[in-house]
Image (cartoon, rainbow, N blue to C red; front, side, top):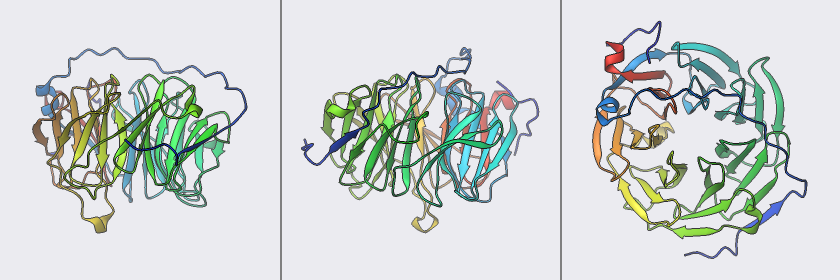
Length: 359
């Protein structure tokens, strides 16, 4: 892939956890309108190590908190602390659209199954979720229920279900066609959550040491698996997100500290600890981000020194650090699910391509 107009720069009890369900019947899922693009390149270590910045966009005055692609990888959306939502074309390497959310603020922006609709969390005037049509820049729905900041938002890859976790100590299950949640879990402390790649189950991380797995079709019965992980070397670090590998075999646990963890999705065994990240200065409010490559063979993480750290996802071995062309903070990261590129962002948003594509 190349851009047509880039400029190359130089064991715990469940007794405390309650479930409340909506009695209304489930609605019929809306099929995805995305068209899948077949992969033409085998993602090898050498190719990933050769990734370099191909284009930079300087549109934000605030810090980008989230990067999400459409399922076909052709578009990417970012949300930022300056209340801007920006959409980019990954094929042409161009900025496509800006939507301002000055009244409500924005965070955790993600595409739904339509490339013209996005879902995001409000950061002002309540703690609602907003469902926006990019076609006419109008709201389709807003979702009420949370009473504190939403910290995680995960969209099902197969239907209109999505889940959220919040500082109000609940994790909620929603349907895009209903403004009220379908059900929620009451938890004694803030949690993180994620839906698996097949949309069959979701994971909730509690207390930065426990993961509970729920069947998406019968989560009202409680978790079908609960496992507790040993505290890592930085016992004070809090979990910030969970991410299933593309094959669903393991879960990447991101934290506020220099370490990350990879655990088995069903056995709950800790595979390994990932180290080497540099944390941001706490006074800046910056957060580290991490995720899998499209094929699941590699894990990449941002670092406070401006680099992207590359790990082997099979054994946790550190491979190398990818350095931008100039030192700058990078907080948000996402690897394209279908194309050979990745996106990083802080105040600037950067597209990365293999250096051979740039040269």
